[in-house]
Length: 125
Image 1 (cartoon, rainbow, N blue to C red):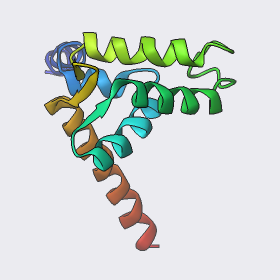
Image 2 (tube, rainbow, N blue to C red):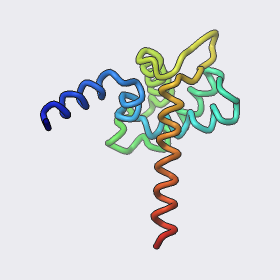
Image 3 (cartoon, rainbow, N blue to C red):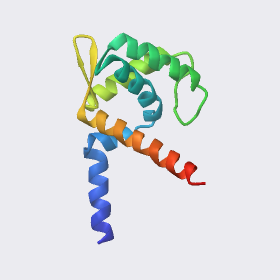
Image 4 (cartoon, rainbow, N blue to C red):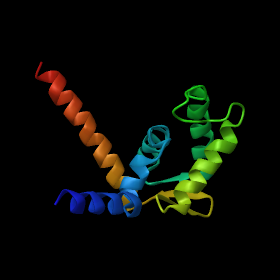
């Protein structure tokens, strides 16, 4: 039973776009960049705006080993990361604009649910 569940979860981790997104090494940084951009823009954002904002966030975390952002290459790293998310189907690029996918929206809902759990557990204390 346990090995069956393990195989199922391993397969899901590699095939489910939302799980791939959340398991990405730099997902916390990319999501913290894209979520407010998409919310403010209503669903699609300019590629260059996303690169610029993500490069700023990468710059703030360039010294953190967990994100492995090469020093002095934050813009290139931001472009490469967004291209990787496009390749994986986590966001879609059309005519210089990034569009949300269903998987990305699911990830945003998951993040919102984490915030709600944190607020609920804090409020109960």
